Length: 201
Image (spheres, rainbow, N blue to C red):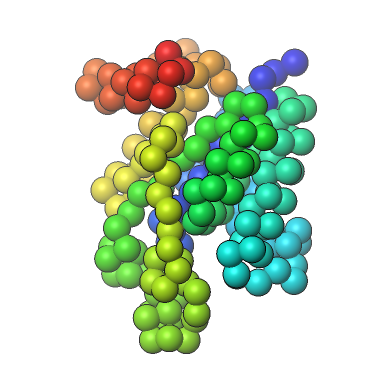
């Protein structure tokens, strides 16, 4: 049986979580890795309908996503969660409940996110039309020990995906491709150092 795992994308609205999740899913499926995406917006519609955006409701939502991820990864699949998940404590709670939990922090300065505000949400939040908006009048607690950090306003999607896949390869969670990666020696060492610092290798 294949080793299941959870790939948990966290970051503020517009930081590229869903885009990267879909791109990584495509690559994993091509490698024969059974994969399922749990996207924050889709989960809100189907699994967490009726929940609001208070801290308590947000935490309940994340616990529900974590529960589904645990079931999927326990049965050998890769569960990909793409949720803002702004609070560190509940993310850590989910981490503790899942074997092979890999956190991907989509790091992006709020100033850049406001600039490229494709959904117009930051504009509404700044105008007071949306209350409790993460990064404006509600906190985002960035992870301190994420296995993978992608700088989505500096890297291309391909660069970020490459970093994620190479990390998963080094962790022994997915098969390496025959051709290897296009990563430079410096980039490879950066990934290895992060995993070493976190105690994986």
